[in-house]
Image (cartoon, rainbow, N blue to C red; front, side):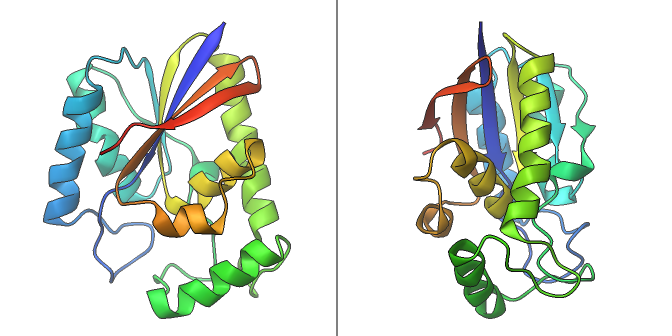
Length: 188
């Protein structure tokens, strides 16, 4: 029985503010509307998301269109790079990402490693595939955690992929049981 997971990376978000509560920019909101329009006929039955506002807001319109609630799952949050809820600048983040993908166990004090983030997020993904076998599920997510989940199944999804993905971005993962059959980008 095939299970479909739509990984939806959040739309553009302000570059300042609290990591947990930053919403979407005007462009991010417009892109969320486009996502809802493009996936409204897919028959999605389940909506889960990182609790971070920008991830929830990116899938909210689609969930509302099909009359579903969004379950927020803490372990789908973005990788925690450092202690605190302040956003790390792009200039600071790139060297951390490079080091993290070169050494999956690397982390800053108070942060988590790629290995730890991947373990918690893949556990959620596998639970979703088991619980909702044969269903279509949307996951509202973030760039690093999405890359780590997809990279668990296919090593092509690594740092270069993360750096080239867009905000938003949408990937369709197809599973037979817990076996990944394929991943396809469905966002233009």
